[in-house]
Image (cartoon, rainbow, N blue to C red; front, side):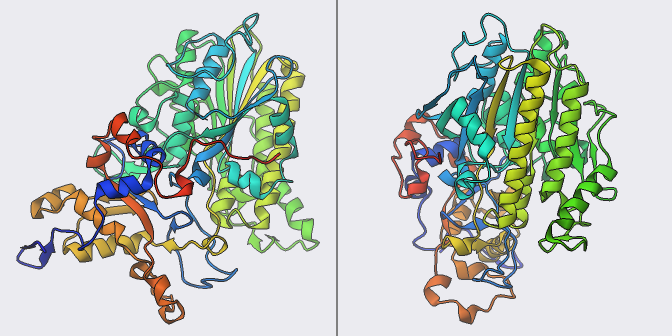
Amino acid sequence: MAVACTGESEVQTEPPQGAPTVEEMAGELGTDVVRALARGYHPDTSTDIAVIPMPGNTVVRWSGEGLGSDAADPRTTHPTPWDYHQRVPIVFYAPGRIAAGRLEGPVDITAIPRTLGAQAGLAFGSGQVLLDHGTFLDAPPKAIVTVVYDGGGWNLLELWPEAWPFLRQVMDRGLLYTNATIGSAPAVTTAIHANIGTGVYPATHGLAEITGRRPDGSVGDLYFEEETDPRLLLVDTLGDAWDRENGNRAWVGMIGYEAWHLGMMSRGARAPGGDRDVAVLWRDEPGLGEFFVNEELYELPDYLPGEDDLRERLRGLDAEDGAVDGFWRGWDLEDPKVVPATPAFVEHQGEALLEMIGREPIGQDDVTDFLHVELKPTDFGGHLWNMVAPEEEVVLRAQDDLLRSLVSALDRKLGRGEWVLAYTADHGQTPKPETTGGVRIHPDILGRRIDEYFGAGIVQKVTPSGLFMRRDAMEDVGITLEAVARFVATYRYGDGLPADVDRSAIPPAELNRRVFAGALPATYLADLDDGAIEGLGPGAHAEGDLTSPVPVPR
């Protein structure tokens, strides 16, 4: 056991005896998982140590109230490289122009912008194109529309198969890639929307996290909260390149929820040669909230529906149970932290979207326009009440209704077959651990336990995807990232229980349960090459297979 004396406390520099090596952990994780983590690592913004919970476990702040029952804390997170977070549909839809079909070859969402660029006549990036280059060779589409269901991966669709009848029609009548993934890990909104927009992974585009390392060394939102500033996105999106190619004559716009979604569209006026593309986001104040954006970089339309429209829709939702009491299924409809998870919010956002289609000059000249639609409520609800809650089915159905309205509006404005729809999701979701045999891991307690074990304040912040460390403090006392990663691998369920948990009610074997499948330091991920990744093999967990074809719901 190696220790050092700091004058105040004894510092431990070695991991616990018997802790697995980093190489052993990587072998347990396997080729597909480690490849996703390597693609998702960027030295400037990523965590210093990526943590991978055992399949079914979730890293989240939680309370012990109701533990093990239906009343248990429903919150979960979704950053993992496991298949239930990684697998998503990719569909291309343009009746009469794109032949229907189902393909099982492994693909990922970084192929979407290359494919859509090719349809518009732009060679964007390099790599796989998922549609025949000649699909629109006689005349490019008037518009290309990308729709993303936030948290709408295959595992959500499988759980609620009756809630998306129109999306099923789109899949049946379009070209569906059933064996698609998001391409990288962590499976977080900022990173994956930038994958969709840029056609490259975080290792290249730079937005590796939601909460990441910023240039001043702080750890925070990589879009700088309400500044909604994409300055850390290092490369062009398809929208940026298309704008520049056409002297900003193209209409490029989006409706989403938060700044994290901007990476699927553009950097707006922040891009070299760019302009203020139309962007509609949401903030939860004043009142119940309002549409907004950084108007120095993007254009916010002045015709969007206001709070009166939202309140009217919330009143209709409130009345569904026969009691107009300000609640829907027990949820407070005056709480701006609840409203965005409701079907009423889907309708409100949908009204804004349909107004955009009606009022904006989409498809009105010879330059292909790009519309991006990001539907957040499925993800917001998944975090609030969890994907297994019946409320989630209602929200998913509301989004399906909106997708139907979107297709109808574009057919009316542009003509059937004159525009292309690309549909996908940015990740799947995590069921309540009570339903899968998983457990919760409290990030703050994990950070404290690391500091306690090593005898030094070396943890800067713990997020669901990993650890940000005080590297200078570690170097001063001789603690390595590898040692901390190996400690994490030995962490047990009983090591991190909140104070309100009755430990006596939990079997000893459960308290001694190892909760992480692995932890990989930045120093390891940065040095990996393709040969080393391929040499890892399939790994020990079925959820780590991200390439084999899988059945999907019909």
